[in-house]
Length: 254
Length: 261
Image 1 (cartoon, each protein chain N blue to C red):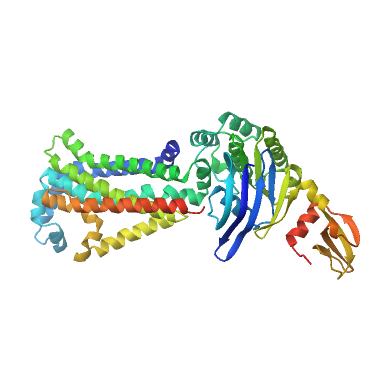
Image 2 (image 1 turned 45 degrees about the vertical axis):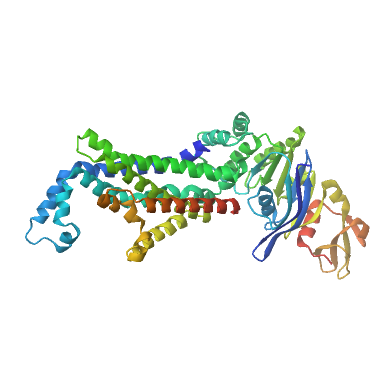
């Protein structure tokens, strides 16, 4: 099962890995260039008001600090934005492709439902974890090689936020991958939930619905600490979703 | 006994796909479940394998099994050779050497991707994997569908040899001629029910064709009508009128039509 599952996800894992790593090298080496560009804008007499509002001058000043730059621009922007999408890409074909292509019968004749489910989920979670750890640790590794002054003490918190956020969207997509018989519906449903939860999260009482504010790590940058309550809550939700997916898979008809 | 099914019932919404089906498959037996399309054969086999949850009934499988599904779908991105290697890793009772021998015999190119195989070649590739499993029971859903006559004959020969090593075959088909060639016991399934089940020779012995003037009623199945005569398939004990031997095709057709007067 391990061999087959790894073969199944080889292409998309490699693509995601190179996309993630490629994205990092579009951010990290351009620290100075970004600063120069933003400073040029701030020196304009008629600086666009929108830019002034979203990129205040004090923020641009703080960006000159390498740690602030890489944490906000990598975790808080580039990587963070893509985490739910990357997790969905890893999860959506996991069960739905087998059902859609009619190969689930092949698997279930040779292995128990329990083994098929947990093999698929555990292998995909392992691959996703390796990807997220790599992407999270890249700033630290790069800073060391580039002799940048990097505040490593925040890296653990950002890594946990990245990992837990990715796992949440992964397990949610797995749930729909188990439920639906084709590959399009799981991804459409999860993208729909991501969009609507982000919009709903604009309202203060429902702010917790917006997983982006957790994944992007805005609280870490402001308090210097990991959001423990949200992390534990998300982990509990992940466990519930995973067990629900398993229960559905045990009863699903093929 | 390798497989026992008792009072199996399975419905899809309001439609009963399988309605109180019972049968046993003995060790070393080829059991054929014969019926027209939509009779409930595939649902029965899927319930046996647990792919569909039966509404009620009891299913017992004594021993290991292998399954050839109706849709012969394998991993399209793999080559045939890789598929065998993958199967070896997934299945515990698989003999890759035997699989490669069968693939060679069926002339399936090992380096070809599954996606590029024709329907017939895909069926033969899947059959090679299934027949290379050392199991007690082989469940096959329409195993020869889409094969050319030469390959169909070869596959039937292979299936016929399975019981020689004490193994059993549960086989579904809608092709009478092949069932006649290989089956020890035949169950005829119509609209979710088994309407007849017996040893093939007994079945042929049991029924005769009776030709009676049109409109005359007999306790049997109306096979066909002409302007002046009706032809019934009836049990020998109920025979009347001009009696003729009934071949298996006639018995099957009459039972499937189900016009019992």
